[in-house]
Image (cartoon, rainbow, N blue to C red; front, side, top):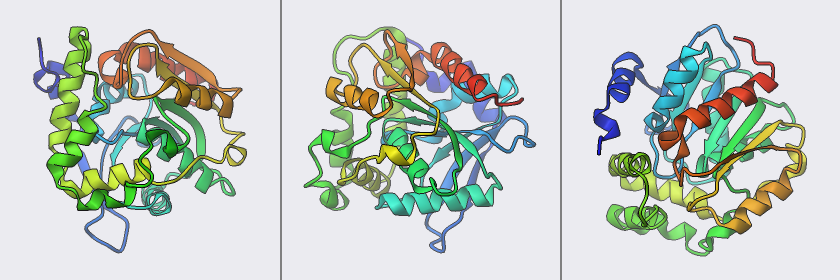
Length: 280
């Protein structure tokens, strides 16, 4: 079984797309890490937000493919933020720093929730042109952890990693999915205690999306028919929240279809961008 981190595509990505670090808050410990690929003259790029366990490079296959097709793609890794509002404010400052007035956002799991909350946060002066929500949710109460969310900061890193790994697929999977899981486990190991604790806090603290504030934004809901951390109830809630959304169903792909089913995911993303008449 080949490992993604030693694959030619991943090594090509790491050797051609530099990792940038940017500070936009007064607190200089809050560092955004990002990969920015494709034409810099495009002022409305596609931005990728990772799940709890992910780093910016989990989207390397999307970066390579979409930038190769002429799109500008930015994959982010967030600093330590403990409140949704704090994240949204930091993300806004980052976009200001990058001189980006409008963006499309692809968010995976927690990244999808944060994408919706940012669209909601900026609804009076809209900055989000469209959303692709992959295995995403709209209400943190589905995890039944709202009462413990404020204690994650106390837990050691190994316990936090155990919580995250508990949501990974445990049964037999095909080689591509196994490689994707292995890669995500490897990425998880690179995250420190405060990074994991803050992400789990954002993932579980009592919060939900207010759909009336973002109803005019085009949405694609991307999910899988096989096992993932997202319950059927959570999926149904997303469909109800966005009755006019396009649906991108993948037969298989688990929690990380952007890694193990990248060709399908990239095609769905391209469809969403073309529907928004994104010019190359």
